[in-house]
Length: 248
Image (tube, rainbow, N blue to C red; front, side, top):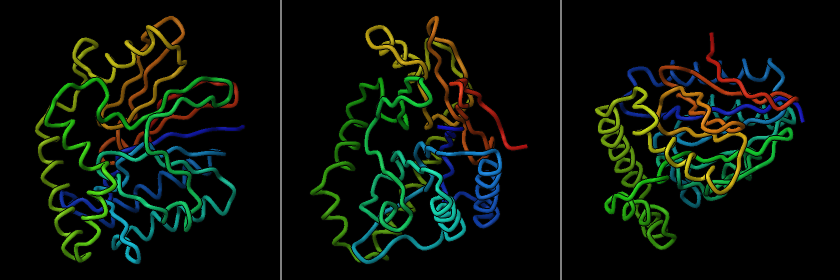
């Protein structure tokens, strides 16, 4: 199958970015690098956009360099996969129809180059917070999505971008450093899952840290970092070896 790449968490369009165009250009540079390395498929593991909502005839302003690069990759025959995150849930066909991406709306276990990979953005795994669960249920509810779509797009996008910026500020207040095996929820989830169902690799975004950790004799968890500070990615080669790396 060739080389398969995984990246996550660019938060394109965030109001917290001091230079949105420069940031987007850096993300495109990373994709150029991945293409030159011989990628045959790329998995975008969530939160590539800070807020993304598709109205029937309207999509968010901006991101033209990123979207153009995606179209170019797709036209070149590179297989593109998009896992929704907690900031870019609301895609309803545009990325599939215009770009040719395959959109994944939940975690999936996929065999790639002979290795079993458990793939997810990472939000909502191994958490028992009722407030978070309620908010997540609302965001994923079809009726709520339809009601939001009835708002004028200018109102909806303004609200969404403000909400995303506020949410990111809260996330940034949390420690973006590795908290140890006993405290990292994604590590705890992977260990729990591995206790009853094997996967060679658990690959997540969401936490904005770079982590490559053995959790069992033949099982590893990879947390991908981000495309904001780290500009990091993982790749699975033809022999099934997984490597976590950064753009030089």
